[in-house]
Amino acid sequence: MKAVFLDKDGTLIEDVPYNVDPDKIRLCKSALEGVQSLAAAGYQIFIITNQSGVARGYFPETALVAVERHLRQLLADIGVSLAGFYYCPHHPQGIVTEFAIACDCRKPRPGLLKVAAKENQIELGQSWLIGDILNDIEAGNLAGCRTILIDNGNETEWQLSKQRLPNHIVKNLTEAARAIAAIDCFNPKTNLVNLKNNHKGTKEDADGKRVSPSSLASATQRDFFEKWDEINKGKSQIKSDE
Ligand SMILES: [Mg+2]
Ligand SMILES: [Zn+2]
Image (cartoon, rainbow, N blue to C red; front, side, top):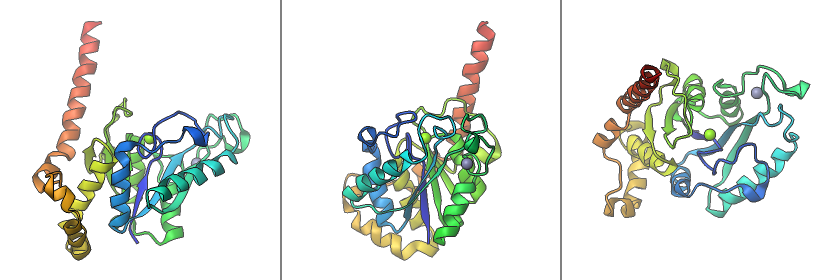
């Protein structure tokens, strides 16, 4: 089985910090088509989320039951079945003793992905992680997944290391799904299935939105390093102004 592990806040749903009120949970508009096409392409959809609000005493762990139920319903409403919801309730500086630990499941650690993979017979090397900050990417890389960063402004520190480098950078989940579909059609292993999917996707072909190999090449690590240079130039400018 192959999977797409999705970060929750800022990737799949609109980011409302520490929110557990189901009424405030909204799927990102730019994520809808993406999550549908990933599911249609045969990826099991998982949510992998840090929920340190539990350790910080902002809400009880039981509040996450309603969050999961609501997310399942929102996805079911657009025809997507959620294969699993995995959260880390911990934080080393938490105030709730039980959860105030350094764990292996809080991203950037890969623990949740590994557990999800084990429990659901997922091949991590065939799978993807999509997130909006580099801590997500690091967790995906450490687990052995391919990774896509959604560059929507939520990553602000850009702390770079080899294990925090995403395979691709895109603007939203739907672009991420297009990139994955395009890569899958060049993978001999999944060629048949995905060529079929792409033939079905005539809408995309018609309006020319399908990701071409050349546009993929430009949306990869080179962009990341350009971004990195840009950020650092900004930083050094700030320093020289002081
Ligand atoms: Mg996020
Ligand atoms: Zn944890």
